[in-house]
Structure formats: C-alpha cells, structure tokens
Image 1 (cartoon, rainbow, N blue to C red):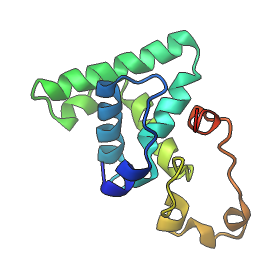
Image 2 (cartoon, rainbow, N blue to C red):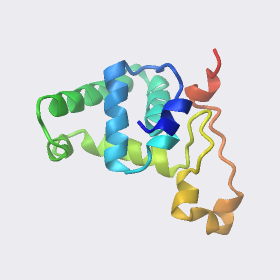
Image 3 (cartoon, rainbow, N blue to C red):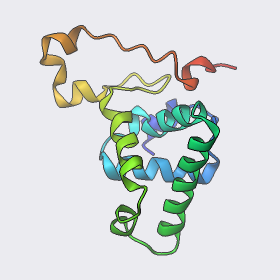
Length: 140
C-alpha cells in the first residue's frame, strides 16, 4: 500500500479480516497496476459487506484461496488459473475504472488518470458513492 493510501484508508474493514484485506490489496494492484492509492480494496470490502450472505461467503472464500496459493509459493499465473479468478478480476477492474476514490483520498481517480474526462458526458458525471458502506459508516 502506498503512503498516500495508508494515510487515507479507513482504519477498519467492513467484512474482510486482515489477511483478506491484504490479499485484496495485492490482487487489485496486480490486476490494475497503480490503482492502490484510490483504494480499490476498500471498494471490494464495502461491496462485499452488503452482498447476500452466500455471495459474500463465496467472495471471502475466493480471497482466502488466493492467499493460500500465494502463501504457499504459488504465482499470479497459478491464481489466474483458479475458477473464481474472473469474478475477482472483474471486481478489481470495476473498483478502479468506475472512478471510485476511498473516503479521504484527494488524488486523481481513474478517469482523470486515463483521460476519460475529456469525453463530454464523462466530464459532467458526478458519482454518488453514498450507497457503499465505507461512506455510510465513515466516522462511526
């Protein structure tokens, strides 16, 4: 995690344990290099917290599996070969390219970094992240 991200990341997780949060951070950065400062792992944690129990359990199990693969000397290629990798990959990409920025982060979002704000409609868009737990429970 970069120092910028460390300074702004919410101090608690919403459903990830410390290991799952670490794996989510590694996974997001491996799939979308440079995404860490915006907090894509915070997005995943917030989204997962509001998933139905069965779906949340599946996601947590996927993160645990990735942690096991990497923790036993496996490579990212081994992780990519897992059945659930497509789902995890999609969530990591969604977390960054939706232009999410974790609470307190004031740096550039994905749209600015990739120049998407030059599209007239994108430049007018104002994202509302209030449905995410990391914004609803900020400061509690």
